[in-house]
Length: 113
Length: 111
Image (cartoon, rainbow over all chains, first blue to last red; front, top):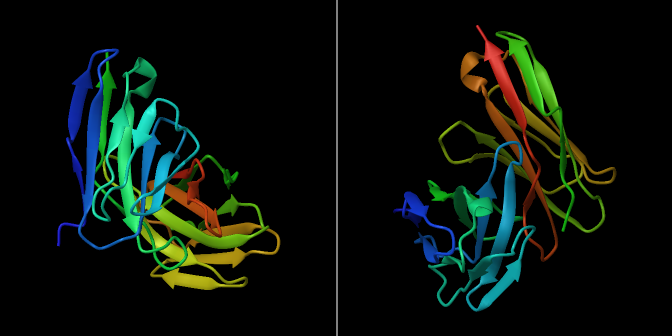
């Protein structure tokens, strides 16, 4: 049972480049979310999904796109990378935010030059 | 988007001290309150998920209480140990909405 798998673990981009951060879970969880971690800011929600075909914006959605075509996968796309998007990105999943805790991936450390 | 507040921002205690942190959240349409422990260079790990007013949960030396009517939760650590050093995050959600995290309380325990 792999849990929540994030790829890549590290990435360096140039300003203006685009890329996709992958997140996959094998626990049949309906709820998936993307957070970014910045010093002193805790975890800020970027986008989330309550099931396949359903996505919604979080606290800091600008510059990011998501889709949820399957229950298992929830990729995060950076459309045109900016230095302000340098951060550590965490993907998380659970059956429901009321019933059980979030299961987090190991994170993707992204640097934008 | 919910506003989840945690205090203090950071805390330094001596080994053996007991300590507590506060998490404040909107009490209207309350759905759930989560506590996580987050060590440097690791992923957050769940401590508790609480949903009922008056709920109390315990895991070893760590316990938490919940007051949904006034919108706060306390996390207690009894007899702090150096391995308790971490950032403690709380998160709250309203029905049908996302889980929003506070900025965390960073605990440092000296031996």
